[in-house]
Amino acid sequence: MKNERKIRELITPQMVIEGAGVRLQRSISPQASNLFDPFLLFDHFAFNEPREGALQGFPMHPHRGIETVTYMLTGLVHHRDSLGNSGVIGAGDVQWMTAGRGILHEEMPRLSDEKNIFGFQLWVNLPAAQKMTSPRYQEVKENQIPIVESAGMQVRIIAGTYAQVEGPVKEIAADPLYLDVSLQPGTTFTQAVPQGHTALAYVFSGSGLAADQSINSPQMIIFEDGDSVTFRSESEAMRFVLIAGAPFEEPIVPYGPFVMNTREEILETLAELKDGTFIQ
Image (tube, rainbow, N blue to C red):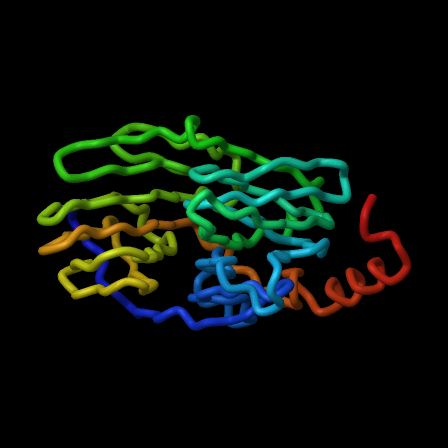
């Protein structure tokens, strides 16, 4: 690759409590500065130690103006929403929910046989022209996610393309790349990323090098611009998710579970919640 991306910033995730006592390791959160456009939030979640005792998860709550992406590694989450949809996101499954003009939904955990549960949630912004579209889901089961394996490497392709294999998530405004990459010791991985796209990687297991810089899990990597990213595992295995997408370069106003473009749109959203017209 001609222009390998260097690391702009390393973020150590911070512990937060959300929902009904869910322990999260949060790397990025919605900010008006919109530094990671089009990405708004990234959480590494575990329901293993809820503050309130019994598992509670995320009871019914609203979203507008964004997409929420849930990727489970262990355990499962039962979800249902105000439109009558319900189902289970199991280990290895992905749910890409486009909230659009508005949805109420809940996500409630169920432990694996090993009595634990964890995965990731990513929030992706929508451009102004799509913030009030109808809500929709892309639900992808583990066996629908293609896997490319080579010496010392396994790549699960959720969105975008790796080694000419395309992921199942389609028609997303941000033109995303979402890969789950596992490297055995002494393995090098390189992926093309379009110039101008925002590129992040969350290393959640092991350690190694990214752009020739040492990385220890858990750590979120923010890359500078360029046309490719390179990782190399050394003495131990390494696993990470690589996420990239096209920025919209629009102002945003985040307010809790809503991300709109103006303060007036946020006030309108809150008024609709109050008068019962939020869901159509």
